[in-house]
Amino acid sequence: MNTKQFDALYNESVEMRIKLFKNILKNSSMNIVDSVGIEIGLFLKGIKLKQRIPGVDFARKIMNWAEEEGKTIYLLGGSYETVVNAERNIKSTFTKIKIVG
Image (tube, rainbow, N blue to C red; front, side):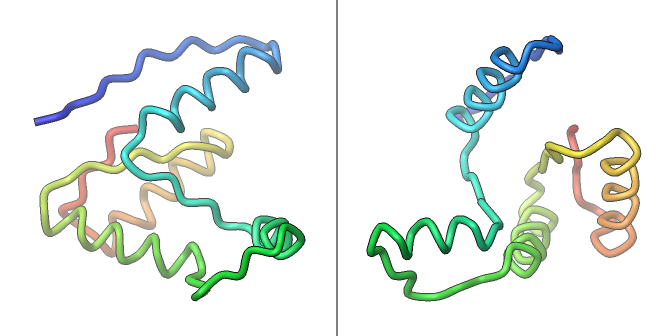
């Protein structure tokens, strides 16, 4: 079984935060980018999406799967208050989900 552990240090330097974020993205199982800007960028590069799945819809499916399979999720981004509110909202729907950060 492949398990990954993250140790993170906070640093005010933008460069350090970017490196940390890149490291998190490189070591996660799946990364989902939810932004119309990504769609525009792909369009400008001549890449057409076969299907558009809004991030919120995909997130619900992932959380449902995680809850059913006993998997964990990690909430990254936003202020502390935003993450706490997101966790509370998620757990009101997915009562057995394991949020590890």
